[in-house]
Image 1 (tube, rainbow, N blue to C red):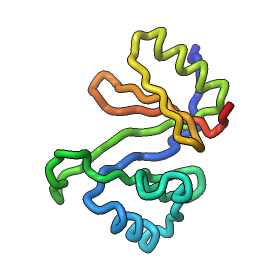
Image 2: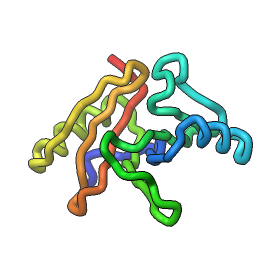
Image 3: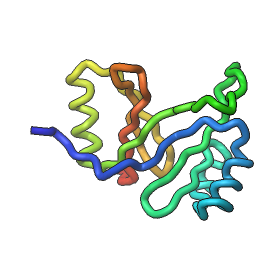
Image 4: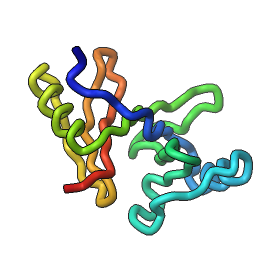
Length: 128
């Protein structure tokens, strides 16, 4: 039996070479709307449609330029309700995973890694 259920993918985080250019491109080409700019400003830049979004991040300090044929993957975020968020935190910690909590003002997130080192996030917009 699974201890919790995710509602779906909340966002995919991408590292892009020019955040402003990418925001404009996703707005113009796919019609995605800019979200949460009044809270977070330019970092990360969130663009989305419906319940799905992209979080656009600049390269990490000291990172080399993003090659045109390379993909820079940041993390995948799964959305849950508040009760599931707390159950998930306990479940992950009981499994011995290192979990980092972040308060993003409009949401709370838990960050951890899969066995291959891919970043995963559990996020809720139901704040206490």
